[in-house]
Image (cartoon, rainbow, N blue to C red):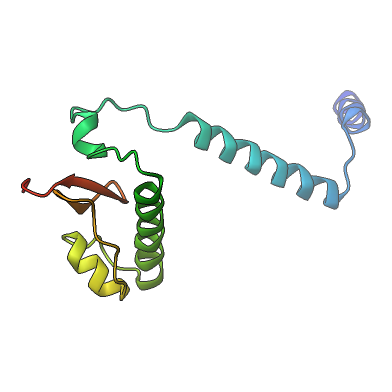
Length: 125
């Protein structure tokens, strides 16, 4: 029995002593590290869809790029505010968001893909 008691005392003396505040800080640090690892790892699943199909028409006009960015931000804000599901098409989004979008370039129309507003051929379905 004496040896077991001595072993326990030896283990206690060799343990690192931390205050409760230090333990809380260490836990927060570990949570942040784990979250950063998960976020940077990302999802590396292979997509079968083509990049052009998900990106749509890539505009070169800076004003059109700015318009798409603005509309994409409004889309995300609307979905977060309403807690709603993704609208079936761009017109439903514009109506729900109560916005009047700028006209798209000739021969093109707005569409929603991957939580972004993009441009597609106006003749496409």
